[in-house]
Image 1: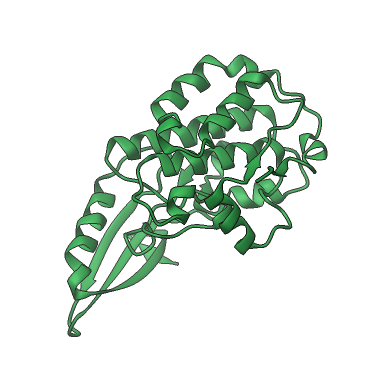
Image 2 (image 1 turned 45 degrees about the vertical axis):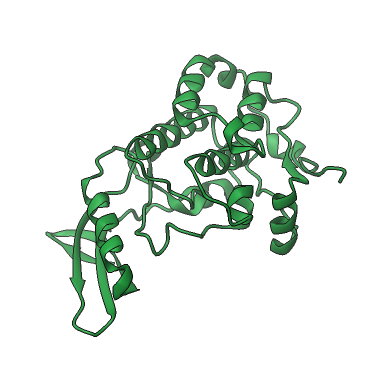
Length: 256
């Protein structure tokens, strides 16, 4: 954390080999151009390549001091339907913008969703290529990433499906399952996240379609934004009762 032009900012320092510097600079410059209400702003960059074969890049970003989605999910207080609908829509809108800019996030998870104090608005945190490559937490990683295959925008759709389930149930995906088992099971498509029984059919379908094993079968974020707009009435039908009480058996190991 530091001060830039009189405001508190987050400061990140990345190190990359000189051979990767050109690509690193290209990505950072792209981050500077992004403008969306639900993306953290990249305010400036500084490059230092005085040492042979090593390039240091310092990135100055907007700073949010109000926590992230992880703190909200883990809180004892239930997430209201109002914020549930708003957050799902904001995440989908921001991801659609990124994909329209030919950017794949690859690490979409609660820790990357920071909260503005005013109205608890979300902003997605972006990083340069050092973090936006083979990365992420197994619980949010699409099968094709785990398998080491080429990635498309559909890896973010998978992560969005996990996030959708997690906000809905206010429970951690694959809770109690060790990372290695998640890795192997996701690669073989033997784990899936089951929406709660109280969930309206339209919402369950949205989650299930995001978590289809074949990336070609998953919807795009354009589809998701339109679907959320069309089914807000179904979202409003969600029971205000504690859905997490019914989520104990929603991480299922299918027969294999």
